Length: 171
Image (tube, rainbow, N blue to C red; front, side, top):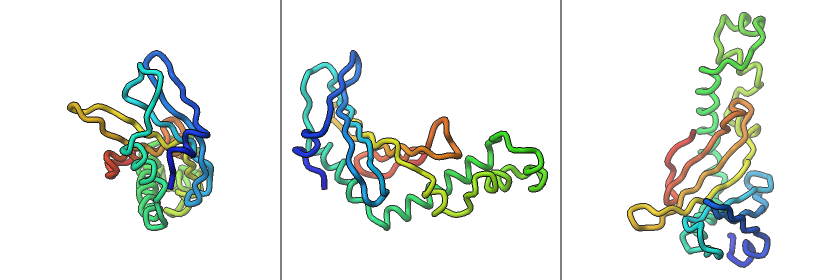
């Protein structure tokens, strides 16, 4: 579980003309890596910030992901991979494409050496976990975006989107 004091002790507030966010790094055992967090505040004009109960609940929602949630994410990650490799030309060597009868998906599988959900997730690395505070119809709501760097989508990556700690989609 994350707590406000630990976050405040290590975080840096970044404030620009039209943005204010808190950034910090914390280890995540489930994903086996240090995770870069960004908390974007709705009120970007004021000097201070508040780690509200909603923000903390969202951070702890992610922090409490377990093996079951990871297995679920692996399946969605693999679906994202399969969709991308079926429609994307990564500049595959002609011989590899010919070997697979011009089937881009099969040629891409060989090129990336990813054949299972476990292999796809093993090649995905969290770039950042973003918490967005936003006013919707007069109420402050929180979104969570888990941004992954993946080799099959190096331009946009892969994002798991949550709203009010409920899964929305993968893009």
